[in-house]
Length: 245
Image (cartoon, rainbow, N blue to C red):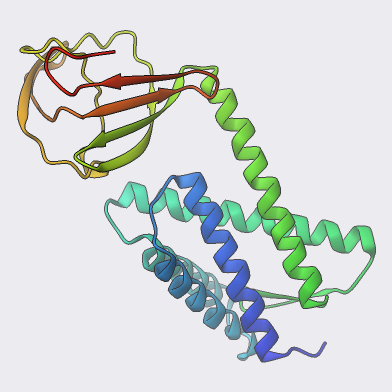
């Protein structure tokens, strides 16, 4: 099999980009386009390891793990180990989906073959066909995600859009009927969220009491919260202490 270096790099660059877009969607991570492009460039460079002499299975595995971790780090950065590990796992899942679609296309159309060396795969099909398969895999994955999100919506998983002082953020939330926490002055109900995902500054504290103990939570009052479950949408306005829809 003849392997063209430029084709190998370009194809892996675009496939890595699609994989990162899918990872971003599944993991609900934020990533700017320049970071995704830089990570995709790293993915294209790593694919050139196929041209090297055959490495031992252990070295090949460690190299692939290190390259994947570097790609995820470049694309999304590092906040917490759990978040990073989740993104890495979803990236591998996306790889499996893409590989499955490409192999299925080869079997259906009985075209080409594949060459594997040092953990890198080169498919002996045209670049157009390979990129088309990758795009089809991306579309299929997005459709599966949408169906999955609709299923979650039926199980009391909601989409939140929180706005304050011109800034906004989207989150997914679980309806906890046991959460009866209210802000003591305004008596507004409290939404509990991961503070690392919120770009807003805290402006007050809210005392809480649970079975496990008591303490205080840092909080802020949003200007608006839009709650959606995929079918219905509710808009809550907090423009003043006396205003609430």
